[in-house]
Every structure is written in structure tokens, then in C-alpha cells.
Length: 266
Image (cartoon, rainbow, N blue to C red; front, side, top):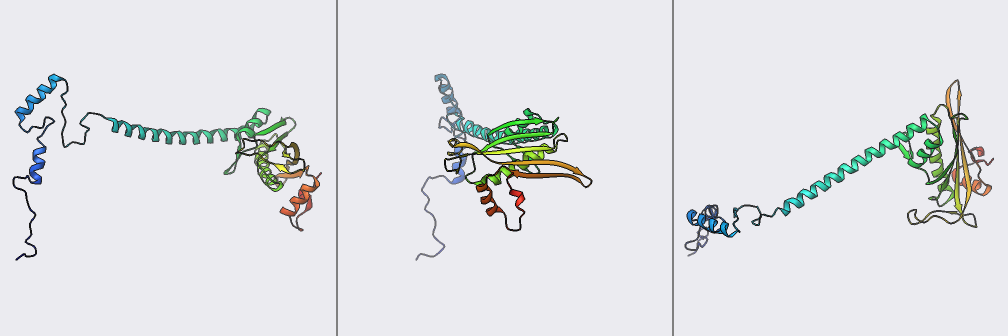
């Protein structure tokens, strides 16, 4: 009668145990022989014929001697390391260039430094601000203490968007320029492309398609620096806005308690 626990696995007669099989294959070489003398003769014969190859059948090495896997792994690791180093280096270099441009604008106000600042952007506080690609410099002179530039906004699709982005850009540019002790006035003109009905046009296809409308003046930010017994003051006046845009912005960003002079056209 069959009893639980008495069943045994059937072992084929003459088969090797796991330990015996491992010991056997540890002595088998590429000739397939465990007889060392016969294996030696086989190796010598194959060496004479030009296709002798020694390898361990239990090894992870490729019997053909190819190292393609190692080469691919090495190339992949090298690519990742080079890519990461390149990204870090680019960030460091870009940050250094940004700081260099900002420092130059604060220390020296010339047409060259102003163009460099508008091209590369400027840092102020913990932020970084870039400017429209289309711009011109009318004046940058420490003798007169005045910087005047004009930019063409092609990314904004409405008056409010243009006002918002231009306010940030003019502030960043003016603050950096007014840190120069020889500069006390910064004029930042903003122009846009407009269609026949006066609607603002913006570029398309990620900036590759430029708007075709006529370039028209939108607004001007005039920043001035004054000093008093209490310290140094930076002030901004917005001018050059037509009546329709002025009314639109007043309705969107002011209340009845806001002084109308902030957005008044002069």
C-alpha cells in the first residue's frame, strides 16, 4: 500500500548526480575529452590546423572569443557619461556667460554691452529674462546717462500679454542698467506687428513664421533713477499707449481706486 512520504524520484540507472556532473564538466575542455593526454593531443592537432581555441565550457566567456558585448556596453556607458558631462558643462558655461553679460552692463554702458545684454538676456535677483530677437539700440552713453532701445514683440497675442511680458523685460533691463552709477534714464520702446484692423499678430510654428503685419509702436517704459536723503529711487512711467489700448488695459488691470496716471498716455 502506498504511504505518504515514501515516494522517491526515479533515478535513471548510470546517470550522474549534480555534484558528479559539475565535477565532470569542470574537466572537459573544448576538445570534448576528459582524458588529459588525449585532450592534449587534440589541442596540438587543432593548433597545427590553425583553429585551436581554449575555453572553459562553464565560463560566461563567448567561445568564439568575440568581445562585442563588452564593446557595446563600454560604448553605451561612455556615451551616457559624456552626455551628462556635456549637459553639466553647458549649464555652467551658460550661467557664466549670463553673469558676465549682466556684470558688463552694470559696469559699462555702451552700444556693444547693451546689444550683448539684449542678445544673451540678463539676470536679476534669482531670475533670468530674455528679450525679443528683433531689437535696435538708439542710444547707450554714460556721458548723457541715458540708454534707449526698441524691441519688437512677436510672441504676444493680445495687449495684456504684451503689456505683461514687456513690463517684466523692461524691469529686468532697466534695473541692470540703472545699477551703473553713470546711467540714470532707461527708455524701453515696445513695438508689435498689427493687421489692418489693429489686432496684434504673433509668430507661428515655434517662431519660424514671422507675422506679416505692419510694425507699430505699442508702448514705452521710461525708467529713471533719482537720489534723496532717504536713498535711491527707481521709478517707471508708461507712455505712448493709444486710447483704445489704454482703455482695454485699464479695465483689465486697474480698479476705480487705481490712479489713472499709471497708465496715462503722454
